[in-house]
Image (cartoon, rainbow, N blue to C red; front, side):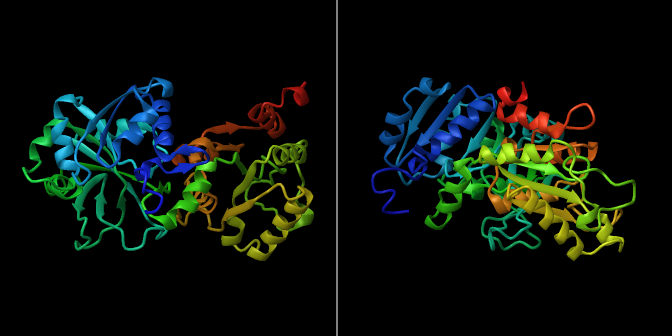
Length: 381
């Protein structure tokens, strides 16, 4: 990471005028954490001078400073008497939009002494990095050296641990991924919280540009199509050509308002008519083209599921596949990206992806929801 780390540890590399670690502290505070213990080694004074006691950031921050080459085991053993009975262990070079209430519920549900968070890596974003096998929510293999068979998933260092598991740590210093997690996996004592939401890092120079884009936090909105933007066709019928597409009242105005506020707008839509032979991909592209042109370029992306109703795909709502596809291609934070739709399946997809959801329909049009979202009180009056 040099020369960026000549005068600072890598979590203090700045994005948009703020160190990476500050984004993590902000997220922890938003997730309800009140106390943070930072285990520091390399240039600890840079971190301490910036964060102080944490009061400026709405949390209480304590520190433990050891040698810059110390690994996780020795650093944890050094502070064992300062840890709660259950605690969250994070590395400071990965940002993943955590939703602690969901993680805690899953942890309690499994009733195991530890749980790690695993990026599914279905998209191959981290080639050759799979180190975990998760079956029915339990880690059955954890191999940092990636030699075990059927590994699928990258452990991203958001772990809920209980103090008793620290008794398994060896006397010699080692990474916790080598010293503890394989032991727990072998005993079937390690839960796995699997996520399809991409994580972002300051771990290498080549990854910094996408982390910069992600942390820019450009406002974004995900929209359903039929029934939200345009008139919904009857059951089992489809909009098969541009001539059959009809905007709902206020939809174009809502898109204009979003464009004025520099929102990235993406549309996600089930299009089973393709899988059922009622229309083609070319037909859908023609409809999308009309929408893009009449919305004056306000729509930044179209995503659709072409599969028939019962194909069991991961993209047809209420499955969240299209939302995760949009997340990866636009580096969205889905926990900060609202999904607006008119159907309970839209709400279920939003919930599965961790996105806020707004329901629209006859009593509440898209324009009303958008005005509330962007704070356009004057226009709504």
